[in-house]
Image (tube, rainbow, N blue to C red; front, top):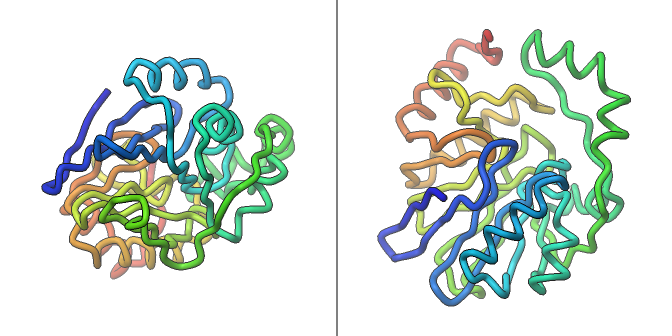
Amino acid sequence: MRTWSTSEGNKIIRILSGRSNVFLLTNGLTNILIDTSAGFMWKTLEKRLDKLGIEQISLLILTHSHFDHAANAARIKEKYKAQVIIHKSEAKYLATGDNILPTGTNTVTKFIVSTFAKKFQSFALYQSCNYDCTVDDVFNLSIFGFNAYLIHTPGHTQGSVSLIIDDEIALVGDTMFGIFRWTVFPPFASDQDQLLKSWDKLLNTKCRIFIPSHGSANSRSLVERDYYKRTYTGKHYQNL
């Protein structure tokens, strides 16, 4: 399990990787989980949390409501007594276990969406979960003992959020990807112009590391280079 630490001593532990990353933010006293992965990953997620001795989770943050991020929310809420937070525009999807249909950003992913849209909708249904609070624009986590806050970073979905920790490390959900060495642009996004505005918002923090839900951590220099290239050339699409 990969771990990052901030100068204030907060730790971010990547509990799961592969299909979708799951992170634990901890200060040694309070635990916050970010995303849950897909339903079929529940046993692995549970075992790894148990291995770390995690008996209680104060807050579960869902970066958005897609099944590979939110499918185990109800299980986390029940077992670890976690409060669940999600952006207000996607709360209804969590409450029904439904998904927002993704939109492709390149030729390949556009074909995938157009071909398998109906199958995706049925395949991706997950156990619904009652949320405890919602994010609008900013949500401060100081009440949980962290110098951290959530910000609204739409683009992948309308209700995507990112977590800024100690103004050093950002957990960005699917607002960026860490799959390709030359770009952080996600293969799916509902609004590409809105996505770039969210990148700008993230770059206006002092964060040096941007950790996505798919792939590896991205450096600030890579995000800046990709942002300026796409902003000033209008090149929204990546070539696979």
